[in-house]
Each structure stands twice: as C-alpha cells, then as structure tokens.
Image (cartoon, rainbow, N blue to C red):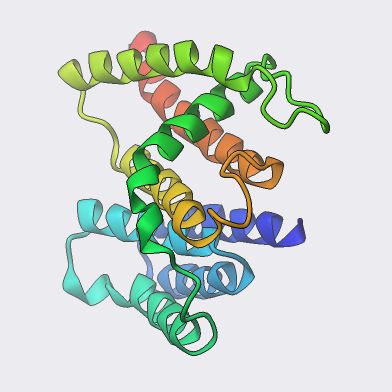
Length: 206
C-alpha cells in the first residue's frame, strides 16, 4: 500500500507548507499535491481539503493555482483514462458511508474494533456508533463557544471527500470498510482529534 503512504505524506506536508505563506512554499505545496493525485484518489481529497483551507484563510483568487493545477491535471487524466469509473447511483450511500467510516476509525483507534482477517468488520460498528455520538457531541459543544479552526474544517473536508470518492468510484469493487481504507480513515481521524485537542489544551493552559 505504498501509494497510501505517499499521498498521506504529500498531503500533510502540503498543509504544513501553506502555513509559511511564501511563494516558494506554495509552489512546493502545489507540486506535492500533483504527486499526491498521481498516487491515488486520496490525493483528490487532500486537494479539495486544501482548497477549503485556502478559501477560509487567504480568500485570494490568485492563490487558486495551488490546487487548480493539480485538479486540472486530475480532470485530464480522468476524462481520458478513467471516464466510466464513477457510479452516480451510489451518491445516496455517501452519508451513511461517511458515518460508518468515522465510527470504524474511532473504534479502531480506541482498540475495540475487533477486526480480524476473517472478520473485516468485527465489532467496529458496535463500539464505533457510541464513540461517534460522543465525538459529535463534543464538537457541537465546542462549536457553541469556539469557532472550529480552518485547519479542522479542511481536514473534515478531506475526510468527507475521500469517503465520497471511495463510495462512487470503488463502491462496487470493495466495501468502504476495507482495511486499506480504514488505515486512511484512522490517519485523518487522528489529525482531526489532534486539531480539536490543540484548541482545548491551549485554553486549559490559559
């Protein structure tokens, strides 16, 4: 699963480079997004997430090239080499798949998923649904007093787009709860939890 590692490293590095707000760092972030998109579909999710990040922070049209170039290259590839890979009839499954992915990620990180080679689902949803409910409650409570960070929003968009892409492109080939996808769900969930905790810890120290 080397492509998953490549795109994860490239996507996270691109997000970090954007914080420098220099032309050289932006160019490097763009190049990393091209690498990410050339690796696997998760690259597209990171590109959309970074587009959200740019829209919420810089709000300058001239920065659109950072994600525009990778997305145009992806569109050219998709139209020429992969024109029939999207099954629009699976769009209705995206909301439930998104909830399942989040629940499985949380149960896996908590070590209670019970996933085994011969039982790919295990008890991940049994424990995952309550953990997801608690997580959503915490997010809602914080949202009432503190606006979520732009980085949290961009990571949430990345998570949602990745699950959506798995649903409409690979839904017939593999379950959204396939282990290689769960790895990515867990990675993005860790980043989301870390971003959430960063604000909480900072406020506690004050």
